[in-house]
Image (cartoon, rainbow, N blue to C red):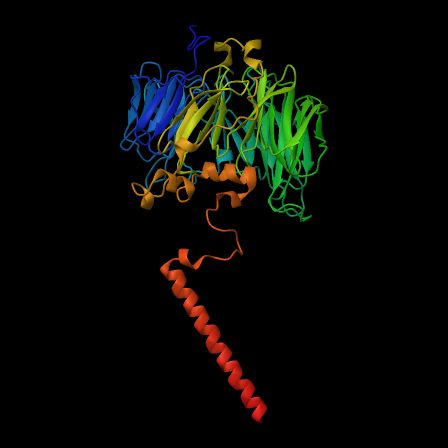
Length: 529
């Protein structure tokens, strides 16, 4: 098979801004002229092999071939609210609001012919962790669908027929299909209820008889979980969470980390620091994982497939770990409510190559060639400084672009096997690079009322300070560094006060005088008595 992309070329990137949607090469910045689409908000999805893109536009649902731009499918379904491809792009799953008389609002389309191959009724879209409700195995041989108290297993190529098997699990709330293709394992989760503990069990298809699970583990403090299978499909990490911390140590509830494998082992992962589990991710090899845990500053550690610690990283303001697809490099970052520090690590030497500033990052993702890492500030999550940056594995800024109202920034997917693994030259620490902070002067935000008025110096001095500048000031010297007036409590020069301030001061002085006169009259009356 011919490769979609070859080593030495940057993968393509999908971007959607105010002026439209484009697929570009981030090194040159040149868009693919053959791709023309304009998804509504963020309703766009690319297939796992990068061959297809599905978009919901104002008047239609369309599927395009990403290389040539050829339209494979167009249906008048502008009400579609969620999209998902099967692993090989054979099918497209869509959900829209259920209408009266509709045979089914959860539809399975065959992308090559635009035909609807199956329909199901699903009133509510549900949370992110339960989408998509139909999940295919990696080879698309089987497909699973969760319904009340059971997981239904279908022929992956024919979902219109009756299920091949039914996995009965009372009160099942969540399931996850392992990514392996030589055999099929399913992890099921039942939350705790009325004093009964939560339970995760592993099952092997098609042996779903009573008590035929291959592994089982029960635990408390688990109203919800994240089930993360290893890339080999032989082990699963269970990140538990409950909204209430009964000890009162955390406002965000309690979390824990457990491990199970298909040979029947089940255990709790022992963490060296108390506190929440912020993130855990398997290495692409599937023989180790990295976890970030504990109260701030959080700890981070590498664990082998037996859950033993093999390396401990320095504590820092971090809550995110992401492995490059080839496994040689990974990042440790502090996003969301943290400052945005982003550290690039070499797995071979376990050295930090650079730490850069990526504050306000909304999305972040390794390129499929493992040579680039994307960070982007998206609209409408943040309405200023929208744009993206591309970093090398050593932390060098390769490319950046500001795009007004950028709402989508994502690499075009591609199997890592389409690319050669990065060489040692990609992992050389840059002299002076770790502490560098990109300037945000060019992206300074000016309020609408101040645009076109006043000098540049006046804008820089006060109003219109960007969020990025505010974050930088807070990190360097606190928010007091952003103030342009006198410090709190200092005497104010009356000559520089505004008219309204002078009027308020006069009112206060008149009130004081009136109160003093009233107090004097009261004292005189008391003396006379």
